[in-house]
Structure formats: C-alpha cells, structure tokens
Image (cartoon, rainbow, N blue to C red; front, side, top):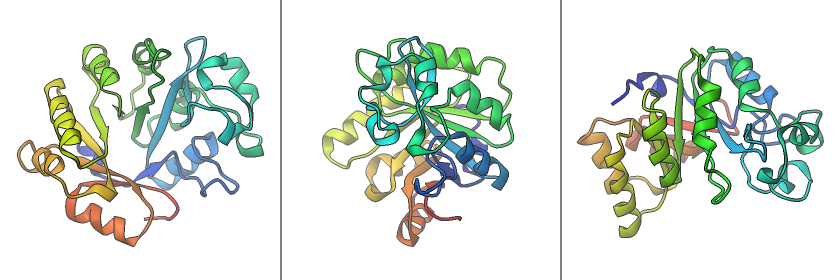
Length: 236
C-alpha cells in the first residue's frame, strides 16, 4: 500500500475553499488558491474535454456551473476556457493550470469523474499531466472501470475508491475493489459506520476520508468512524 499518511494530516477542502458558490465558486483557481493559502488539502474533480484535456469540473452537464448547454466532453479545452463559472470572470481550468497554481504547497486529491463512452483516455491523460509534478497527489473514483485503469497505469500514485451506500449489493461491490491495490477509501459521511469502512480501517489499516462534511454532526461522525474529512461551507 502506498504511503498516504499526508492524506489524513489536514482537512481537505471540497472542490477548493469556495464560499458555497456565492462569490468564490467551486473548482475554480481562486478556490484552490484560497485552500492552499489556508493550508488545507484540496479535493477536485476532473473530466476529459473533447480533445483529450483533463478539465477541473464536477458535472458532466455544463448548465449548472456555466449556463451553457451540452456536456463537458462535447467541448474542446479552448472552448471550455472561454466559458465562465457562475457569472464570474473565472474559466473552466485545466488540471495542468490547477496543479501549476498549487505547486506542491498542499496535497491534492483528484476525483476522476466517469462519462461512460467518453472517458476511455481519462486515466492516461491525467497521468500524463501529473508526470513531473512533485507535490503530494492521490487519485480516486466512483467508477470501477477507472480504478482498474488506475491500477494499471498509475501504480506509483495513491489510489482510492470513492463510495457510498450500505446495501448488501453495495458492500459486495466495494469489497470486490480491494483486489485492485487501493491505498484509501473516500466514503459518504452520511452512511457511516458500515461493514466495509470498519473492515478497511480495522483489518487493513487503510485510511478513510469522508465526504462531504458540512456541520457539527458530520464532523463528529468523521471523528468516530474515519480518519479525515472532506469539508465545505465552514472553516475547520
């Protein structure tokens, strides 16, 4: 298992240190700058553009964050760079731009977002962007197919399963992913404790981070059942 002790050393700002999209919006360079300056680790989301550039953006559809129609995978990186987030002056950043801004000052946790049929090269392109980056970086995904690609193509980077659910089917699916040499788990704080999280912490000594912590109750749940939180809407 990769050494990810840094992953639990400090709280992780969910999509950067934004202000719940009032003035400083999620997954923008100002949100990442604010997190780095405050000393928080950073979580961000990555999709692939039409021309194969990893873009920092949460949704598959463009509408909520930019007002534009269509999906992120339908636009080239240059076109996405001309869109503006939430009516601000901020464009959709590339992963390369985000990493250049952070420059190793704080750890970065990158969630690879799946767009089935449009993400075949996502892992390869993210690994290419990360080549030569010296800062602490971990990669994670909900998508099992992307985690399998990460195991094959990013074996030198810590890799984690992003997960939720407490049904028997969910537990079985999560346990099956332990065969792919995971380094950590990121789990919905609203579904703790559960058998999977207890197993990976107690039996495998694998760190668990939570998402998304927004209040005192979920801070407490993280303290009781996990090792660090991914937070938004307050300063820990």
